[in-house]
Image 1: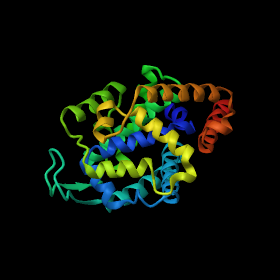
Image 2: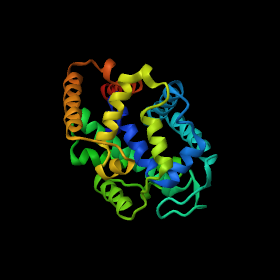
Image 3: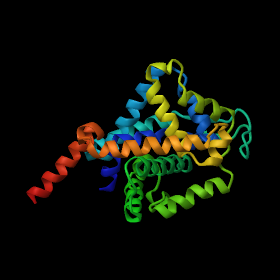
Image 4: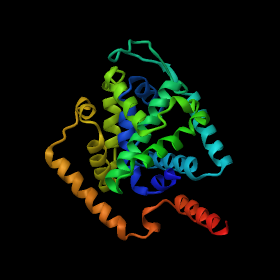
Length: 270
């Protein structure tokens, strides 16, 4: 599976900040996150949240059927607790607009931002995928849709469909970055007390802002200069070169190596 190849690379976690900011660009997602999570709880909570998120991703990608279903059930249980109404108008969404984390349209947006970000991050820090590999990645990810409350056929099953969907969301003005989204973005990129993990935060911020579409980045109010582009390209080149000489134990998630080993063993036994 191409998802195994992409998701076992630890470096793709650098795309998650980009995915979250894309998600928060939808006011109903931002309202749900802002009203039901603690982005401002400090570096320890930040690390714990990342560990839970990584654990869920690894389980959904490399877990057994029962582990995948158990992880999906836990995610769905969290989503069922997240609902409410917009306190104030944001763009095309008037005050009082209801939001619900189990809404299939919102879940589809979250799904698409994650897939789009994973593919872009892998291409930048590991290497490009072929068109067929991108299509297979999208199709494999879409199969998880029904477990998470979205019909597989409503999710982009090819890279072309993914690109069209992302463009449509922007063109139809469904993405509006309000003050709540800006506050959450600042808390994500610079959590209180984050100096103890400053190097990781610097790299995460560089990757997040560099991977964001320029119009979205501008609407958040982030400054991005030509020298930042050059810096990101240089860092990515160093990371790609370093990756080629690193053993799998230093660049891949243990769950990914375990799954790869099991797959090789099955092929050998066959």
